[in-house]
Length: 63
Image (cartoon, rainbow, N blue to C red; front, side, top):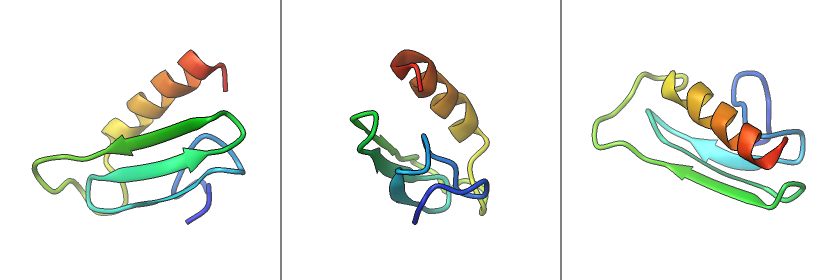
């Protein structure tokens, strides 16, 4: 899966996959690989915690 508004990652070059609550991807342009798993299935269509985590990664990397 590529970066889209429905499946956000770090940018257009990002690729990976998500599931109910989980997210894994890589962004070659920034050199970041990201994995997030949960011990309980989250909501379908994206876990709301992703946005906070991705904002933190973007801030650290300056992306």
